Amino acid sequence: MTKKNDRFGLIGYPIEHSKSPALHNEAFKFLQMNSVYELYPIRPENFIQEFPDLLNSSVKGLNVTMPYKKDVIPYIDTLDPISLLTQSVNTIIKKDNRIHGTSTDGIGFFRSLYYKNPVIQLDQITILGCGGAARSILATAVINHLPIRTIHIFQREGTHFNECRNFIHELQVYDSNSIQIQFFEWNDYEQLRASLAKSRLCINCTSIGLMDENSPISDMNFLHSDLHVYDIIYKEHETTLIRQAKARGCSCQSGIGMLLFQGAESFYHFTGQPMPIDHLTGIHLNEI
Image (tube, rainbow, N blue to C red; front, side, top):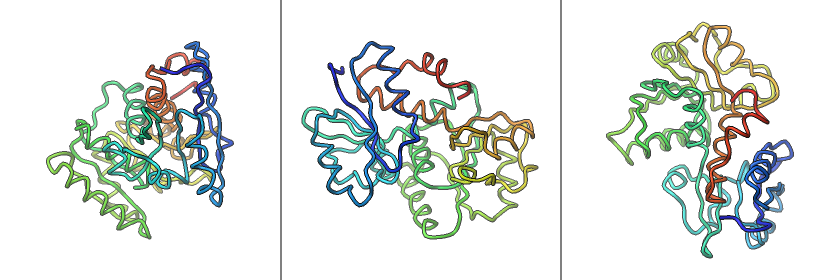
């Protein structure tokens, strides 16, 4: 349980656009908890000096965003299985004189997905990109034995290509009897068409569409009305992918739902209390 004037917050850079303070502080207010959630922007050149000072302050818990999800690991005493597999932490909890790290991105994604689509069938999934968010989603699916038969991943060639392939191998070593995961090159368009045709869920885990009007799917005819499209990007206006998907009759979600539910998981780690999801969706979010 939180005590009077407990402090929590978010570290990263830049973070002035973050919705996390509004969500957490509204939850504190609704639950009548005298706690506060603040932003702690740390420039990369100052991380080594400022982060340990923050960690040793009175702050009780922290969320971590880019570019520090891996950099914080050496400062943490214990990591849960998902953070160990992904080598990524987005939630730090100080408890019993120990510092614990976890990642709530994956569980936040699936909670938001099932919140809007409680009976969605996930036999086959197509994931675009294999960065940190995708890895958290994959690790969550494998560790929690979710009812998914096959996942197809498409990743651009480059410095992270072999790294992603190695990560998938680690997942299969972790649980060889779990989900069948296949890895494809980004420009294998015929395979992408075939994968989407058999999928009921497509997840965009790339940044394509965040700062521009591009789409990670070059041919909108690859999309079909039985497909649910989840673009984890969240911004004020719909991404091109979401507009394409709606035009093809797909059901859709944006990244705001993942933001809310991963925050809810962190909130529970921080306070021991559930975040009032229905209250927050009614106030802040028209669509999750």
